Image (cartoon, rainbow, N blue to C red):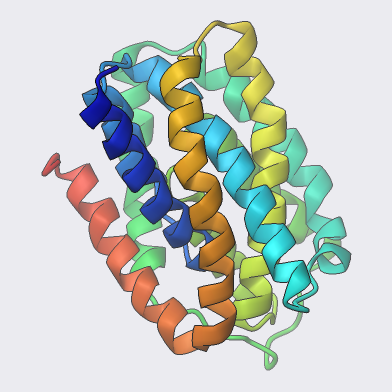
Amino acid sequence: MSGWEALLLVVGGLFAGGINAVAGGGSTLTVPLLVLAGVPGNAANGSNRVGILTSNLAAAASFRKLGVQGLAHSGKVLLPVLCGSLAGSLLISRVTDGAFETIFGLLMVPLIILSVRKPKARTDLEPWSPTTTAIVFFFIGCYGGAIQAGVGLVLLAALTRAGFDLVTANNIKVIVTFAVTAVALPVFIVQGQIAWGPALVLASGFTVGGWLGARVAVSGGERLIRGVMIVAALVLAGGLLGLY
């Protein structure tokens, strides 16, 4: 890893950590950056999780310091998300490259549709039943454990549908994403799919970006979050079309 590659990973991680804290979709930037730095695709998918873990921990701590509470609200979704994350990470490690591309393409279509829709706090709708909540968040966990990229956007859509405002939903999102990654990361470590040098360099930028992104989310409010979500959606579309 050259000096410019390390700098690119730090800067990319800083930007992606902020994007993830405010909305989601940062991994669509960092995984290609890892590949550009010479990390093979499967290892890039695993190595990216190190930065995701540290940045979401930093973002959760920043939200808490700023007085935004999310931990108490995340309990009912954590167990199905964790189960889904373990299942997704185990399954994705067993598929062929062709099958992975097919799964990725199918999942990105609804993801992009969700990301361009404006999330709203829906207090006028009946809350999901415990069974529906468990099923929805289990499959979100499966996606996060398998691919990760854009899972924050899916979480925001589900959480705002449950009636949370976007700032509170962002706090719950980073807590849930941290839990998803904490379960999935050991699977990639055991299978030797972590390039530790690039992963730790990227994680340094990710962590600072997560801390700063949480502060921006709180100070900027929902309008800023909405704007970043639109940008994140465009980034996701560009990655799907192979533009970078």
